[in-house]
Image (cartoon, rainbow, N blue to C red; front, side):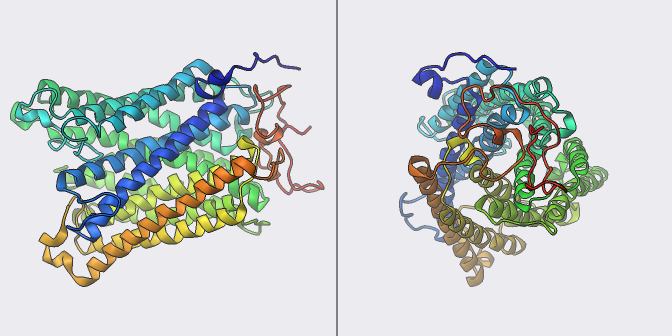
Length: 559
């Protein structure tokens, strides 16, 4: 059956206000990568302050306490909401879903285009908050009252405008991802190619669908909490003001009811990328497809009953502490199953250590450190001591950086030939991997030691605490800071590789990795409309090294 596609749009319609899912996916990816450099610069500035307090910072100048709070707040906000979500969820979701299910575009292309531009507007609002009178938001990326509630002292509306814009930007971003999520779900459910049964879908599609469902069910309470916070700040309603009968702890519950499922909203697409890459470059079927699928569903459900481990020292009933400790430890089980399935896929495989494979393996290795330390923090007894120390900061970064950066970079290197039509430089890619891996560990392993030593986060200058200014602790802070600088500098290699490869890299074959999923059956880059004719699917996505075949791959659309 031949398909009919609309005429190709002009320049603006094709590259700016495009309804093509591929262009929209690249727009999300590019925006997320650019925001990552802004977030990285903020991290450089406040890490230099921690390592060398009171000194002028090269490339910035002298940092004052209010700026420090602002930079820490905006770093966390940008990296979670404006880097991780647009890259892993919106970027890869837009690029892959229509091609992997075998259709020409998203179910609602115009809504898809609108979702990106609402997201872009949220980016402008967030960055604009740096330039309004007063200060950008400085209440922490979690926005806990009373730190985030300027309105309690009767200030006029225009005071604290940076905080108002922060809340508006977050709200706009959530609207954008809700619009995108609708497209992801409807496209995957209703527009699969003939023969693309649910259990023939690549595992990354399942991960994206479950991530979207988790986001949709979790985001409502935080939207309500943010509206109440904005009303407290502007109309002095007092939802979180104890003097007016409110409760600041309420916001913590509303935030983390969304915030902890949000971790898995980011983790699941990354795990999907890793599973795809490991299967391709070990030339073996993905081990335990059904076990991974069921574990992912269980993890999505459990993610809604772990949030209060963030309130272990906020006055929670000890009986509830025991419940949330148990659920927190339980949720490690489904992810352990996924990781062990990846390791089993590697077992006795014909492994090729390409750049995507290195980043995928690195993501697993580093994420294990984050997962294991999370089990410790899931114990309310240990959390009473470690809460708000740099042990938590280290754990958090060992959970998210492998997911966001290692997993995201693995996906970019893997699908770059498909969507750009050129191959990246393998030598530059591997140097980029090793510099990133070594510097990442040198930056965040010392923070575990600093946290156990009692160093608390959200402190501008540790010289006021003599016990934390011991020579070995000061040295660890400086090592971590130098390593952060190296890690940020290493990303320049990534940019150079991408730009040079885009301009004059070797032309890519349609299927350079000899993979099975449907996106590799079309031209590189995919044409307008993707498929002509529509494909038919005959098998699952992981038929590698099948007995009796001369090739060690078996495309899904090969009869």
